[in-house]
Figure 1 (cartoon, rainbow, N blue to C red):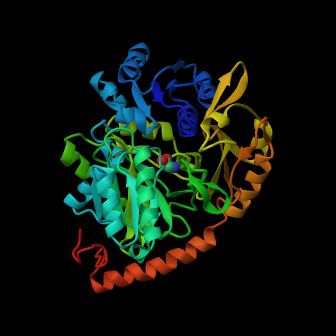
Figure 2: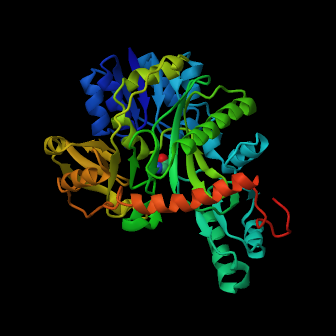
Figure 3: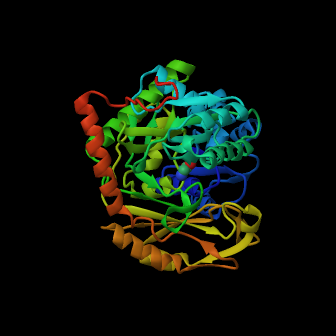
Length: 477
Ligand code: GLY
């Protein structure tokens, strides 16, 4: 059977790896550059690699007509927003990936928040949406509570500004800081200016990815993304500098009940999307969550796909045939899927060239080399991200270049393997990576315990999700 995979990053490399590992499929890929990790899997299965504009629905259709795949898999969000999954379905080909309409759950935070309130889905935050910067700036000047200011439209996980001070309205300077945040976010929003201001919550974050064919729902093991560029969570936000998963299906700071409650939220959301758009949700829907004192599991945002680098932490832990599971999801038979998972935890460490994420030009065009056989011996797997194969060399394209993955009995063991494997990567530029990924477990367990105590108390008092301090006028927004 032929599978056509769309996308070019490390997440797609991990998907290509599992599709090829299945042994049942010939892998075809359509990327915007030649990712060496995807290419290796395409070559292994005697497939073919296509390079072009993956954001163009017409180009996707052109590749579909050349390959005639049995099913498709779409990795990144932008092709989904632009109708890549619709292109498959219009040609009568099953695909893992929601329609453009259904992927609005990721594209627009305002749409997402509206949906959650309309369908009474737990874990929803209060928010206000603004169509222009001036109104948003006026609001933050007048409002004194803690807020998170975000662009409504997806801008690659970047742009969130938090004004975390209940007394902010007392200080001129803090008011100015809030307005500056609105301006900064305004600059990230290209077309129609839309800003969303949400009540600010705090707690450990985690992501639940759920695969669905619209009727059956298959939750994967949880993962946690480390968003900030530099060690100890400082520096600008990135797409993710690493991730962890396991042991088992949860994380050490999220319990079984919280996992189940999160699954319920994601499932209810997929069902609400169908009611709202008329489109069956087929593909991954992923809740990027925070455990908060307000709700317990609380939605920060949704992805209409697998997270990256979260996928690289989860996919190598899947011991059953994930390629077949993708096929079953695409073809509406997900109820037959058998998901088996290595119980041990995994850590992903992303490696990026100097310049990422703020100066992509500086991060482009650098050479990277790595000793893959030695890495394998140590027990690491490498997925290629923003690296293009050019004249036999591995050349950076400006973003996270590599994701190294290690599975071990303990997080400590995985960190040790990653330290050894990182030393096997070299470049003609400085490389940026975080060695603290997977080493913050204890503090997250402590943080979760405090939050858990508070939200359980809210459950007892019947005030889960209720907020009294979140309005300039004394009422709820
Ligand atoms: N790791 C965050 C994302 O996939 O958007």
